[in-house]
Length: 222
Length: 321
Image (cartoon, rainbow over all chains, first blue to last red; front, side, top):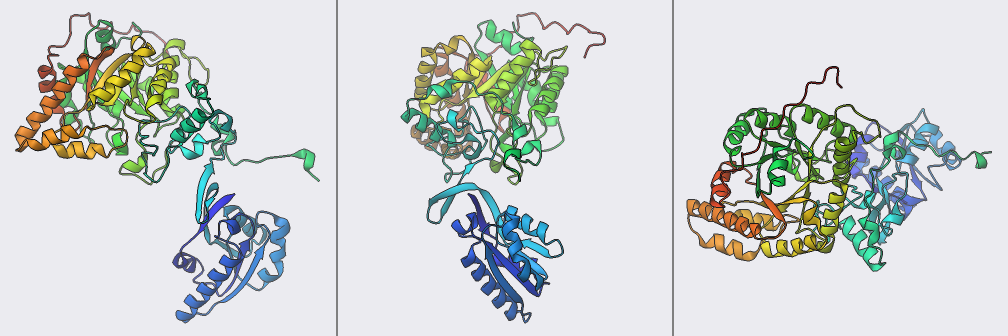
């Protein structure tokens, strides 16, 4: 899933300081799971903003709505009625959702409430970790199911670098060395031979470096 | 001989080679580089110019290498994968060769979070093993990474780093083997303080016969006090025995400590000479370059071999590109 984290209240307040009628939109997908922008977080942000603004002597009218998915126009269209009554929309989705909302309601001022972090998963409650580098060409079959693009700080393909020590990355003791993880996994599987082979330079043209990407599936188009 | 590198000739001649490091300054002046080069050139067969070491912006390694050439030294440019993509790397390698540079050390590079621009974006289009292979193929096959061909190839003596103290320990030799297979001609290791652990690593190197395929230069760092050792103990990928810290701590007085630091360094070099498969030493006297002559002399490695013919000047090639 896409993992995101809410911006500080002060920052969000600043983004809408000149707005008096606001719709806060939540999303029931990834950001609900990572507890950043679901219905509950929409309620918390709405109350916090109302309180902060009334303390400033600038009361604000805030509507709330959480839709199934903000990255899908079908659901974004459900916001139509509420959008009519406001000047500004705070999207509590990932960057994708913010853009779909902004694209649909071009005459409204749309701002993000979250910082979109990475493609990852829930390691334990309250801990989410990055797992995929979205490089466009999966090589997890070479590395025992541990991604060197996302989990090595240098995205090395022939790692580890000299900075790996005691299983940790040179960048921080809080980061596991991705290549130590790969080594351990392949050792468990008796497949260290995979690491002896030279891995050639990656084709980054299928990653973000090739420009904004699209997936087109004519077979499923209506 | 694969190249016109002086370092290659020394190594191929069976001499115990000496290289040292010169750290370019955080300014636009070449004064310090020239001063160090003019002294060190007689004591070393190669002078490494670091490439924005520890991710701190410094005068470029290739520019610094030209100053070393002007002073009569033999430069080894370091190139990291952190700051350039494959286009910039190949371009700089062509440029470096055209300026008279004959040696390159291919590195991953310290992560930018260490340096003075921690908010920068890194590149890592290639990793160091891929960089080694690329330089080798540019030289031996006159090919760019894309497969396009060139007329005049950069005939670089290709180096790579090895860290005998990084983890996973067992994999370190495999990684060296990958670098050798990719085309590394010489290796400069991480600084050695724990000679015993290094010797264990060299045993694994010899088991694979790698010492016969690549010239291995053991890295050493002279230290001025126990503080430097204590600091290095916290640096990822460094192994510092406690005894050394005790030994330095026991010595009192700044000058006496410095003398002890030189003594330790010379002792380590003497021990490295005894390790089968070690072809030379790489002295990394960071911010203390002027001490290198004393160490080289102390280790009985002076004078350096100079009895071979100077490299033949490049034949003029009209209309060549």
